[in-house]
Figure (tube, helix red, strand yellow):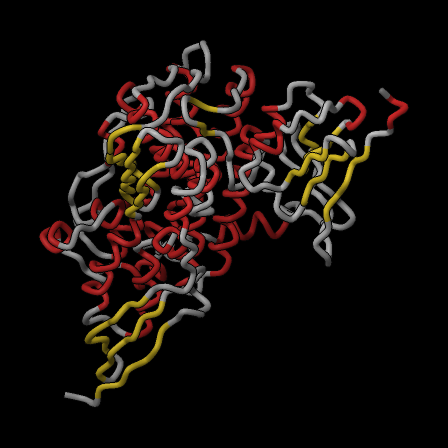
Length: 116
Length: 359
C-alpha cells in the first residue's frame, strides 16, 4: 500500500506549462486528413449526380438543368463518400469544421453558364 | 431485518455518462437487490439495414457507439466480407488492427478517468484524459476524425497510413506510454484507490461463466477468453496473450484494463514492424448471401454481429449483441450485498455503454 502516489505528477503539472490551450486566442492547426466540411469547386462540376447517389444521408441534391449543387450541412456526416465517388475531383474535404448555425439551411452552389 | 427502501439510481446521475436506470432495494445502507431498466436512447439502427445499401450501412454501424466506433465498423465489414467470400489484403488487416488497438487504448483511458471520477479522484481523472487526448490526436491525424474513424469499408480500408507516418507514430506512442506508466501506480497501489476497489463487487468465476459475462468483466474473474484469439484481422500473426486476473472484484477488473492498455501499445508496435506493403482494398461485386456471426473483442468485451443476406443490396436481418448487454446480469449479482456508496464504482467497472446496448 502506498500513499499519495499521484503527488509527483501533480507537483510537476503545477509548475509546468498548461496541457490545454486558451482556446479562442490559441487555436490548434487541423491535420491534413481532418474531415471538416465538403467543398465544391463548382466550375469543374459536370452535375453527374454520383455524389447524390453515394451520399448515405441524402444531404446532397444535384439539379442538372439549373446547374445547381446543394448540400445540407446539418445532414452531412463528413464521411467523404462523395469525394471518393466524384469523377472530376471537384469535390474535396476541407479541414475546417463548418460553422455552427442557429437555423437549418441548405448551402447552394450555382454554376454560371459563361464558365462553360 | 431493517426497513426496505427503494432508491432510484439514474438515468441521470453524475457518474453515468449514459442513461441506465437502476432501482436499488436497500436495507439500511446495504443493497439487497437491483433492478436495471434501459430504453432511454433507442434509435432503431438495426431496422436501417433493410433500407440502406450494405456499403452505406458501415457508416451506420460506426455510429452505434462513439467510443468503440472503429471496431463496430470492422465487425460489420468482416461479416459482409465473409458473406461475399472476399479476402481482405494483408495491409488492410494490419491497418485495421492498428486502428482497433488505438481505439482500445483511448476507450480504456477514458474509462480509467471515469472510474477515478466515480470515487471522486478528480485529478486522476484529468490526468487520464490528458494522456488520452494525445491518442485521439493520432487518430485524427490518421483517420480524419477524433472518434468516428470512417476508415473501414467492405473489402478493406478507405485510407492508408504511410510508412513514415507509422514510424513517427511509433515514437509518439513510446512517449505516451511512458506518461501512462506514471499513472499506473495510482490505480494499482494507492491506498485511497484500493480501499474503494479491493473486495468490492465480487463476481466468482462460476457466476461469470453462468451469467455470460464478457470482456474485462469475465477476464477479471479468471476466465482467459478474448475474441482476438479467434485470429481475425492481423491478431494471429502477432504475439500476445489475454490479460487475466483471478480475484473477481472491482480491483481485478481495473487491473485487467490497466494491463490491456500496455498490451495494446505492444500490439501496435509489433503491427507497425510487421506491416506488409500492398493494396489496401479489393473491389467488391455482388450481393451478400447466407448468414454469419461475426465476433470481435471490443474494449468492453465480445460483440456479436449477426448478418443475414438474401442476395439483394439490403441485408435481410442485422442484429448486434453488445458487451454491455451481456454484462448487465453479472452487474445485478455484483450489486447485491454492497454498500450504497459503492454502487457507482461497481456500475462503472462493467464499463457501461448504453447507446451500444440500445442501438
